[in-house]
Length: 301
Length: 198
Image 1 (cartoon, one colour):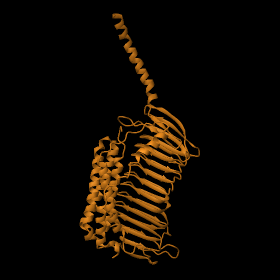
Image 2: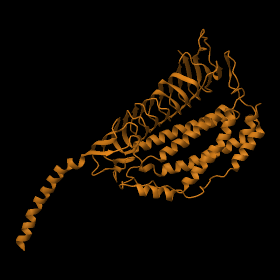
Image 3: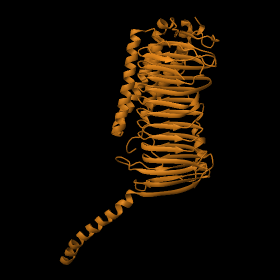
Image 4: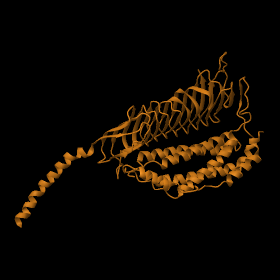
């Protein structure tokens, strides 16, 4: 009996050491699990991805399969499955405290319909031609390629889109919204983030902020109707010289500056803009630029 | 004065909008057959996130928002219609102030306050819901939500003060309606932010 007690006392430190070694060896394994999964998916299948902390890099390719690789610090956190028409995968959130990071690299059929949700997650989407729908809280969202439609939201991360989808909804709160491209049906909104749009042609667009500045450089499609509206930011419009139509400006507690030309050929006519009013040119586009407290600056060049 | 700006017509439209049902129930419950189809095609169970705790008041918020939006459609349709819009424009350059339908100011004062009250009520309920789960948000996200709401509220306060100074200003009404729309939209987004540990 006495011997048995002594034996137990002797073995306790050894057990502690063994446990400690197991923890030291096991910790890195648990902290970083590898992810490597493959599924077949129809060319126009649906893919839903969840990752609440880390990065998700998605690339469209010409194969009818989905490949996900990467790492996760969430212990046994990866889940996934579905059919050839719809897949869902991602990393579970931590039950308590901040969710550890996961880095996902995804290849999917280019025409797939993509849906991504995250929190502190940076998302990058490239070469996806289907519908792209991304929503995160504090991460950066970047979309490039030729998606048919884009829905993208982030609260305080930046949103950058280099594409010309026919339908685009982009929102941030404090994050900057930068779009290089054009579209037929566009709504962009921020609370305090600056909005910069350049490079493409617009048909119907509503671009608005509460305190953020709005900058637009580009041309408009025939019959276009676009509105730029900010409460306390500035609106800067640099329009193509041949832009013709009706320009409404309004800055009741701010100021209006600018010079515009009568387009459609002929000698350009320089006119001063009213602080609040409408400038009618030939038949064509309708542009509305409003800032309650800020400046409205319109330049044709 | 164009027909659309007729105060009597506006009142009739508002009265009709107010008389619309606040909600329309679907004729039959479509969910069971949809679920049956989904279940029959299921290949593998996928662990999903728990559904957010939807308080019963969401239906009420949705109704309020819908009601405010319905009234706004009527109001906005009147506000944006200006004499001359849609008619052929002269080819020469013309510069002038934005026309303000004078008939709107006295006639729209009462309905406008009703619309604003609807917005306020919808915003209050959404704000209460956002505040209730604020502690579950990441501290940085919480700050973003607070800062953004403060910016929107500050804009609304500006515009309300401007409207008091100039109750007949359709431009201010337009800004105010837009600010409320943004507030409701932002609150809905904030309500959907995933909380820690959920």
